[in-house]
Image 1: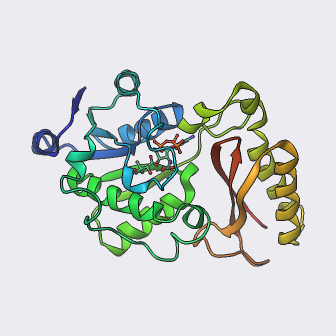
Image 2: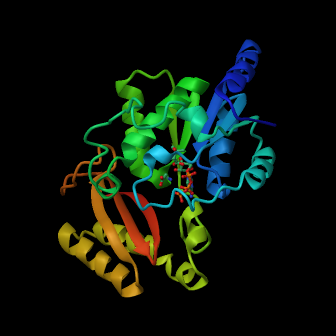
Length: 283
Ligand SMILES: Nc1ncnc2c1ncn2[C@@H]1O[C@H](COP(=O)(O)OP(=O)(O)OP(=O)(O)O)[C@@H](O)[C@H]1O
Ligand SMILES: CC(C)(CO)[C@@H](O)C(=O)[O-]
Ligand code: BAL
């Protein structure tokens, strides 16, 4: 398994794989890999013949005051995990390779509506940065399949819409969230949590589960349920950034006729911003 740092090297390697008739899979990441990333690689491995994993902490999707500088960069450890996971190639460009003329004047991709609200409201410009870098990665690699996690549910919706609207010739696949035994969604940012905070963190998923259960049991006062969930988070020491119920297919607000629902939340635990979501059906 090679690690390549330039677009030219990567394209040459991919041309060889394509000439051998291989179908290409891409798993875009920001590194500091965990079992969640490994399931994405496994899915790409099942569906394609040559799996590329990109590792790039994309400055364009970080806001002022966010954790761009402190984001964990662990390339050697990531390479070991990817070798075990069966990846064929790692693409680890630096910022200059991805943005040779800088970011200020770079073309940006804006995906309306689905990027607005939720994480889009708290992180202005974030999804423009995500859509831009994912579009670049898709154009660089030209994969048949690209695999993303449902943990970043709104991100997946943004990428699907971008691929659809721009007629990108790629299949976008979303994989279920991998969790720790206590339910906490695996995330690189969990590494920021203190021992004490790590014990509290599963409350986020438990709150999502209990809210979904209440709806499935027939409760329809959504604002009251959301208020109750926010209060539970606050009581446990988490500060909700947002907590909302949406139509899982469109991300539109829900009503009593919505069948496929998703409850999504972002919450601060100390300085760490955790996100999670849960898909369910309101019968
Ligand atoms: N627990 C998980 N289960 C499945 N997929 C995941 C999980 N966590 C992240 N992913 C997916 O892995 C891909 C790369 O994500 P990223 O490198 O940002 O990891 P992360 O752990 O989500 O990091 P962060 O803490 O920055 O959110 C994305 O498609 C993301 O949705
Ligand atoms: C999709 C992605 C790799 C784009 O930088 C990033 O947002 C992530 O890791 O989820
Ligand atoms: N995992 C999504 C990328 C980000 O938070 O910037």
